[in-house]
Length: 170
Image 1 (cartoon, rainbow, N blue to C red):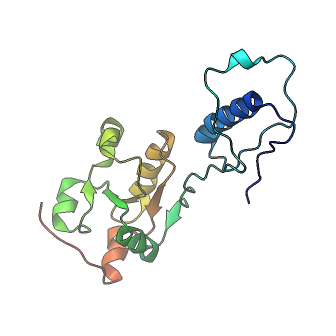
Image 2: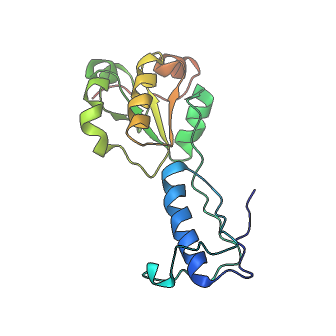
C-alpha cells in the first residue's frame, strides 16, 4: 500500500529534504513508502538543501522484497529458472560428484572471504548436500547485507530425488 506525498501547503525545499531523507532511510531499512511532512520544521532553512527534488505527486520507493529464509526444492528450481544465482557451499569433491547446472561453487569455509563474487543485484539460493550448510551460508550473506538470499531445504540430495537436472565433474 503506498501513500501519496502531500504537496499542498508544503514548501518545495521541505519536500526535497523529506524525499532525500526517506530514500536514504528506505535504502537502509527496506521501507517501501515515502511520506513527506505537511509542515516545515522550524529549525531548517532552504539553504540546507544543495539541490531541490523534482516535483512529485506520489513517489513510492519499492525495493525488492526479501526472500523467505528457506525455500523448497520446487521453489528453488523456479527461482533458478527465473535467473537466480545458485550458490553451492559444499566441498569440491561433493561438487564434482553432482551439482545443479549453472550453480557456482564457493565452499562454506571460503564464503566470508569471497563475498565479492556473489552478486548483490539478484536473488541468491544457497544450496548444499542436505540443507544444513546452506543455512549457514545464507546467514553469512544476510549478515553481510544481502537481503535477497535464501537457503534450499533438502539440498542437492532432495533436488536429485525430485528428478531435477544435475551435472557431474569439475
